[in-house]
Length: 232
Image 1: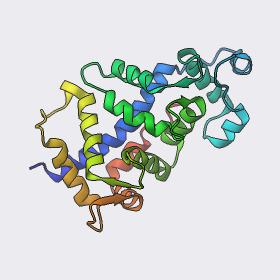
Image 2 (image 1 turned 30 degrees about the horizontal axis):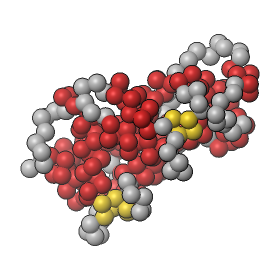
Image 3 (image 1 turned 135 degrees about the vertical axis):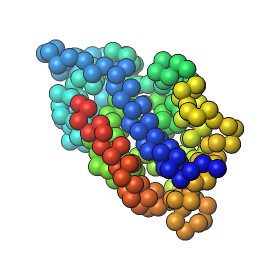
Image 4 (image 1 turned 90 degrees about the vertical axis):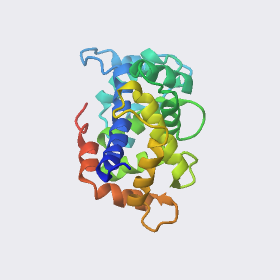
């Protein structure tokens, strides 16, 4: 049987993976140099299939400055000339970052968390809104976003099957670097301990309030959420 500390470590890992995987998207799309004075002109003049909202509006809606938004858009446009990212592109990106594992299912879940309107594509606005929360948001905002990721069917609860699917996707993504070597029932064992901690009323599901309360009581989770506060 897995120890309580090992299961809590998995919960922290899950939070860190959410943020780190978003940083990998930033790396892929390009935190490029700040010396290009044409960034703003490019944002105004580039013809793409989807034109993002004005910078002033996005600046008001996110925790990024106008200059940071210009940089992010430049990288986004370079890699996604159509102005949108589909799920297959997400999977291709994560396959590059995790070559020793299978990142396809985790990329699938993460894509649907970014695609808040469920249109089948992630626009620049979706991208920066999520990054704003994950990198600059409050602890409460980050945890709400993570809960939404884990709530696969979007019914407002996390059930055991959803959590098993997420945990399995994380292990599959890590591939051969997962230690100790996993047994087939390891994800479910971890999830059982996760539910013992988070399912306060023992009704078989974790609500947002239960998730927030349990995570905010865990110093390791809180610290992990603050690791990347000043990444940009």
